Structure formats: structure tokens, C-alpha cells
Length: 147
Image (tube, rainbow, N blue to C red; front, side, top):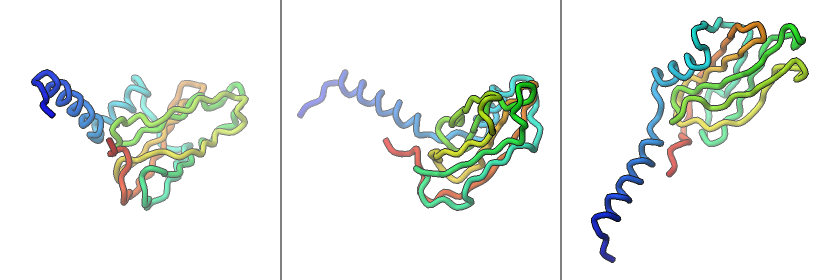
């Protein structure tokens, strides 16, 4: 099979685009993602508990639990919980939006982790404040690297 120059250039460009998606974010990328969530505000440490196993055999399926201390009343509740991962191709992993009708600010889900890293949970409260918690995990088989 012969390949012409145009087909080669197109396939090379597509391949380079795929490999750039597999590059892991840096701590600076994760900080920038967190700053986009926070805007000009700072997040206080506390009220947010993030639980991830300290050792994960397979990064394709990582169980994560986030709890935020809040009475969940109309005057004082969690509006959103954002998850930022320092070592994933895209640091913004997921956002959950809540209201006072949610009852509790407890989230349990599974995420993919591209490497051993620190994961950050940021809670946006109804009064405009932000609270954060973090956890680190060691991943033996990384996810997010398949093409």
C-alpha cells in the first residue's frame, strides 16, 4: 500500500493530537484549574473530607468519597463540589451541583486517575466561601494513558 504525502501529513497531525491529550497535567495546571473555580477568592482548609484509598492497583476505577460539613439549610448549604486532580490529562475531573434540598453534602463516585497524585476537593458554599480538602494516592497501573 502506498501512502501519498497528504495522507501522511493528515495521519501524523491526528497522531500528534492524540498524544498531546495523553500528557499529564502538572501541579501548575491543577493550580490554574483550581484558581478558575475560585476566581479571586481563597479556599479555607477544613469542612471538606476527601477519602481515596492510599494505594490503588488500577487507576481506571478509583473509589472516592467527599463529605462537606454543612447543615444544608436554605441559608447555609453546599452549592457545588469540584474535584481537581494534579496528574490527569485534564485536571478538572468532575463537578457536582447541590442545593439545600440535597439533604446531605456527601458524594461517592468512581474516577480515573492517570498517575500517583494529589486530588483536591473544593466546596463552594451558599455564602460564597470556598473550603477544600485533599488526599494523595499511589496508583500502580495508571489510567488515562490508553489511546
